[in-house]
Length: 249
Image (cartoon, rainbow, N blue to C red; front, side):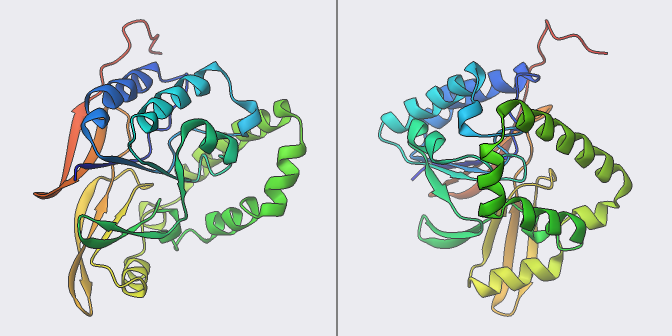
């Protein structure tokens, strides 16, 4: 089977070049696949299914066209779009993936994650994550006006950028011990995740032998796609064409 994995597209109307690249990907690559996995941060932010705008509906329609063709689509939340709800899943026909989760990938048991849970050095973020994803907190937020949620999302994005500028790269990257702990907990030799925006394949020393950690790349100047087929796992990158009408400051 030909299975595609992508993550960290951070889709937003502010980046029409990435939106166009995604549309091309769906038409040219995803259409030739047997299944598609999106491992978080598909959108730059998500303030609720009830706050979807024409931009979001257009993306949803593209995903629906994929699932209507009879192909399974799997969606995992990221740190940016964790508030995606059941309405969006119904609209797109996507299947929700818990983080972490284990799948059978062409005969091999593989662990899938977004990746933020692996960054155990960033305790400040992990505390925030635990609070903001509490079902009670999410339920209260969904009751607030959409205008308030949008302003809150913008504030959180701004705060996140400021926080990253003061944190070391080591703190924001995955903790090797946590990688080993989870891979051994789930008894896998392959882990696939995104989040760190550092596409690569790393060897992992496990008690059962050598494993591998595959990091999906974010979509910015390049788009990254991991493909699994009878030949194995292969990461490919393609250039994202800039928008000729976009004003660059």
